Structures are given as C-alpha cells and as structure tokens.
Image 1 (cartoon, helix red, strand yellow):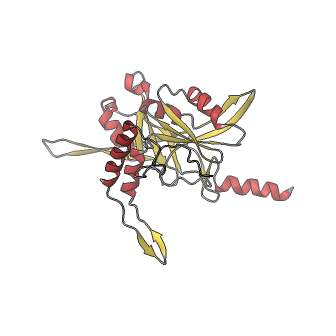
Image 2 (cartoon, rainbow, N blue to C red):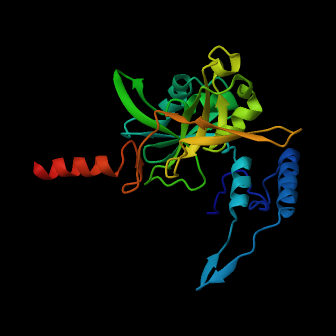
Image 3 (cartoon, rainbow, N blue to C red):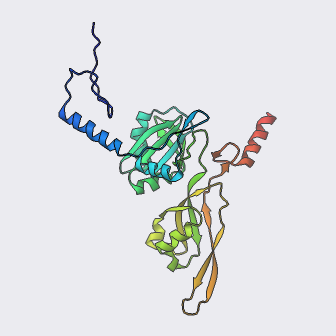
Length: 273
C-alpha cells in the first residue's frame, strides 16, 4: 500500500514531497518571497574549534537580535512555585500588572515567565511591581519582577533591578528633563520620571526610576559644576542620591531578596536545629 503524505505547510526552500498535491498560488508566492528574503541574509561564519562547530556573536549583535525579537521591553516574572498554568497567566498577568497594550506571555523556564511588552508605559508600570503577590483561586502567589537581559540564566537572578532614586533639595531649575536624566545616568539607565516631579508639585525632591546593577558600587552623591561662561569661574555643589527600597543581592546563591550576611544568619539558625 502506498504511503499517504498528510498535507502540511512547507518550510522555507522545501519542495513539495507529493507531486500530485496541488499548491495554491498564494502559498507558492509566500514561499518564494520567504526564500528570497533568507538568501539576502548574510550568515555568520561557522568555525571548528577542537572539532566542535563554533559561532561567535558580539554583544552588539545580540542586542540587535533582542530588538528584532521584541525583547528590548521584556520582563521576567519569577514565581516562588510552579502551580500556575501558562494559559491562565496569559489572561490574568497583563490585567494584574496594569498592562493596557499588547504583550506576549510565555514560559521561559521553570517558574520563569517572559513578557514582551509593546508599550513603553506598560513596561515601566510592570517593572514597578518589583515584589508582589498574584491572587488566583483564593491563593496568593509570590513573585518577583526583573528586567530581561541577554545573559538571562534561570538558575540565577539577574543583578539588574528597577529602582527609584531620589534627589532631595535639588535646585528647581534642574528638574528639567535633560538635567534629571543626565544626573540619573550616573547610577544606571533612567527609564521614567515620576508624575509629581513632572507636574512640579513636589519641588523639594526629584524622583527618577533607573535600571541599575546591584553588584555595582552605587554612588551616594555626585558633584555638580556650574560654569560661568563669561568669567570661566566654576562653582561646585554636591547632590545626594537616595535609593528607595533598594533590593539586596546575594553573590553566593545569585538571588535577589537577601545578601550574604542574611544567608549566613539563616544557615546558622538551621545548623542549630
């Protein structure tokens, strides 16, 4: 008896395995266009190192790939347990996080959910959750939010975190967007200025959210220099940085939420039992 080939879409460049099966004009056109697009891509060179096929990507290339894959505004949600189903999370997570636009929700690794967020405002709002609980079916599910990075590892938490920094007693003229973002860049990558700062309703303190590295030596202040263009005289002042709810990071177990000191105390308590 002859084998029956079930109809299926052809991959790019594949010929029809069943010559008797007719292919629509639209399918042939789409396949031809996809093939032409692929042939225009300059492929990376494969080298053999110790007999292993090896390919090298630069950090810049990976950042470009991340943009193409809509990962420049992606976040990771790590749950403390894996009792929730992805199909449920696709419905409840965007609403819970306050996401108004489109986002893709998928399981990246055990207990790790990847969200690719379209709107920048939604990205900032979601990152602001930091640590929280997701109510579902009468239970509270603990989770932690991280910005996605190209060096993501499901066995370790990233040391990157979104944190509000406060600039108390800042001169009101320096509340200008360019000056605020410039000063905040000394700490990390500024992503948003809070509403009270933008509306100028709290002139005593400016507030900016930045994505920073918890492993860095974070500055407690910065020097501000004011130049008089006519005389060339420079006046200096110092601006304090205050970190709002800065997460701890344990360099031993590579997780956020505690540090090595807290870990050693917990270990000592366990050993006494």
